[in-house]
Image (tube, rainbow, N blue to C red):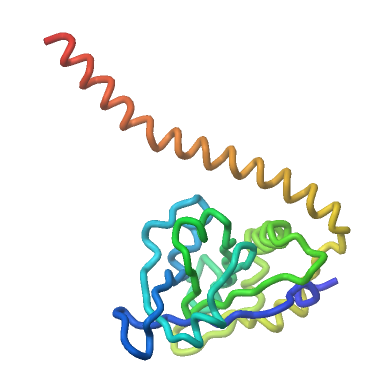
Length: 202
């Protein structure tokens, strides 16, 4: 079983326009490669607002469970192929979401748990597998996505097995996000408590 076997459809990206026009009246939030890491930790605030045509809006708007892959970019120490998961939380907060044309989105086939596939893709990425599937044009690295999908294996687990694994990984991720939020707010809480102490001392 290869990664290519689990993908149902690809959704091309669209950078759109900065302002609305007759040709591009539809507001969307456009996920870039730079947004992949923030999205993974539940931070959606910097995703840019763009405007796309009716055709792009109809064909390229993503839904929960879709995945966005960075196909161009990377660095000497970071390969292309980073993946972002389109969560219910992202859709709820931002509404209509597309990906930029330096990325491509995909949707998995029935019988595959999207979150399981997302986490497996992350596992492959973190093991530097995508360095083996890169070309370079004008100084920009490009992921040879078709070659990667046809070559990289994925375990042929039953949907029940996938669901169990996905549920466990999701619980772990939620705990990590909660701990990060607590740690992020500790300095603010500490500052507030010190201010209260100063006022009481006065």
